[in-house]
Length: 179
Image 1 (cartoon, rainbow, N blue to C red):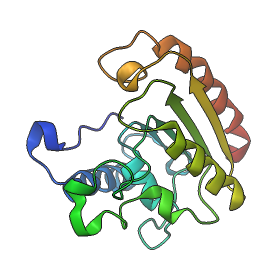
Image 2 (cartoon, rainbow, N blue to C red):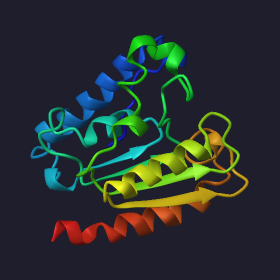
Image 3 (cartoon, helix red, strand yellow):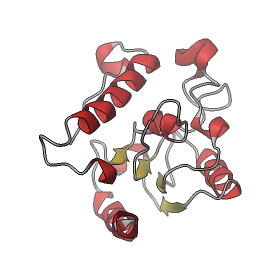
Image 4 (cartoon, rainbow, N blue to C red):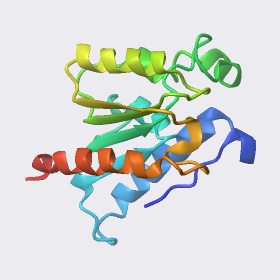
């Protein structure tokens, strides 16, 4: 299922409202899974903005049941003053920063980052990857050469074919979790 969540540049939404939309969609799918013949034990979060939902994926207080996996494409991982979005989040910038809240027991993760991304940095993805490994969380990390921020899943899709095989392979490798 595709989720359209509110964004600051389209709907004048706050990051908190965007996060509420992501959580709301996740909970709605779980709640209505039977009527749509969805196995609620096989739900993955996939996307660029899903980093907002990933922030909570390891926090069991927010998720009674974690997603089976999370695929992140050029995610904003550091929302503090040294990252992206602190001006929008103000006093919540540290609380919303996935990089600063990695702990054990996160779901399996695929992290795909574009080499020439000018919104989110490779350094942030590298740091996130290291934090995930430090906490023994399963993670695969792919850097797309000569690609920009929107090239993977945004409007510019010239590198989408480059990222798709990584995603398909990663998803296939998660199948043992379902048996």
